[in-house]
Amino acid sequence: MPKSKNRRKNSKVKKYSGPKYHKVRTIKTPYCKHCNTPTKLATQEELVKARNIDPTFNGTFLFLPQCNCYEQHEDWMAI
Image (cartoon, helix red, strand yellow):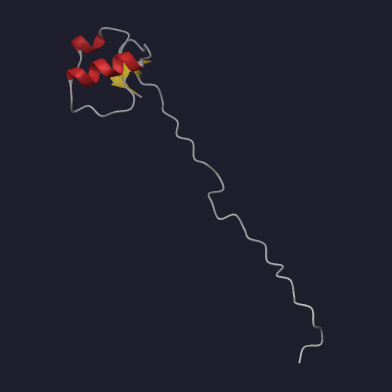
């Protein structure tokens, strides 16, 4: 028989089981290999135009060149 008639209280504390830290993905901005001009990130309107031209494009972002080196060289972009 127990010595005390009072119930024991549960002293267990539930611990947070979610992720401790959120990983932040950073995207490096590509640039032109030949003239070192940085590219710019396309706006939503330009992204819609690119999807209309190429329906297989499903990217969430698009980098557009600011120079004309892509017309002369195939491998113009570097990260």
